[in-house]
Image (cartoon, rainbow, N blue to C red; front, top):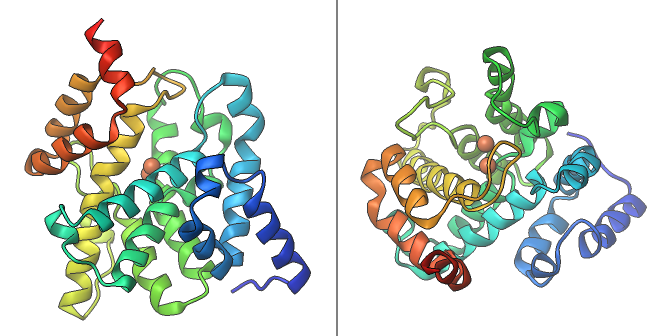
Amino acid sequence: MCSIAAAEQEAISDAIEGWAMSPSEREDDYLAQILKENPDMAQRMMELAEREKDIVAKQNIESTHKHCFDLAILAKSLAESGDIKELAKPSPQGKKIFVMSALFHDIGKKEIDPELLTKPGHLTDGEYEIFKGHPQAGYELCLNNLSNPAEAAIVAETVLRHHTYKQKQPYPPQSELHRFDEPETEEMIHNYSKILAVIDAFDSLRSARSYRGAAPREDVIGMLEADFPDQKELINFLVVNFIPPAELEKEKE
Ligand SMILES: [Fe+2]
Ligand SMILES: [Fe+2]
């Protein structure tokens, strides 16, 4: 596990308060606290932002870094709402694990060429194979860089599975997933990864990407229901609560 000197940790904390986060993220002390507890991982997150900074500005698209923070904010809201059965009354530790998994779910993209990540148009088969490696890369980064080994094990496993529960082209294959001996932990990881998969797809669809614009509300519902047919309740909850009213008004025009 790589360790960071005190001065560097302080610099990371300062950066967390500053350029690395948008104003709404800066207001969220909960996420800042997670990053302060995990300086090695905060460093990896900044590397993720740094790698794609220029290309994101040039193409005027949303960064992976921002997507990770948006997903963590969404995950926190869901865990606190008590309305999602898989997240029913999470313990403080369970809530933290879920939010951390959302925050770091795409950290594995740090290992992928930003040109490939932001390529306009569709990826070739070869490029898609490289892209599909990001959950495994994220698993390793979480396992090696999160400060608390117990949290690291569960967050890493949840991150590994964040594309496993969709109907179309899930990855990595079930056979490559690791298993926990404790059924309760296994169930927690299963539930958290399942919800994470849905909210990840939701956040991607509601925002512009290099290969398409933000999807209209009806398309968001249709595409999510096709990919997660057993999650209609959650999909409805997300659309009703997290697509801004301004977007709905625009659609009515
Ligand atoms: Fe991903
Ligand atoms: Fe994602």
